[in-house]
Length: 133
Image (tube, rainbow, N blue to C red; front, side, top):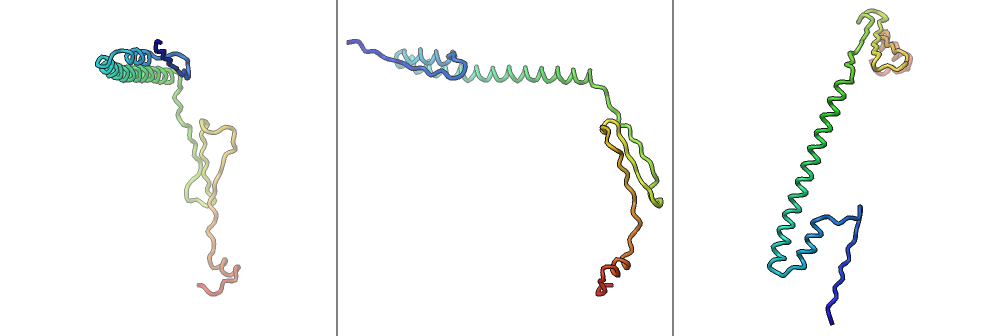
């Protein structure tokens, strides 16, 4: 009675069998010394093919990145900050206001002011801390 062999293939993803799997299956059916050499050559070709695919994809990504940068440079308007400062440092009751229309989105302007210096002695008397001087 003839010997019957079955071979199962599990397809994951796109459902197509890559060339190297077909070649390995074919090489395994050959006689020993030739199958051994064919499997080694197929493995080397598979690694070389993967390296070339990676190189081509990276080259394509670099090309797309350069095109995107070029597009941005052509269509981006240079934004120069418009900074307005008011106030004089050190004057009594001074304040400073910095505005930048690029950053501001309708927020109210913020002013800071310098508070008059506190009197440490007066604070000690208010707190009732008589032990320290």
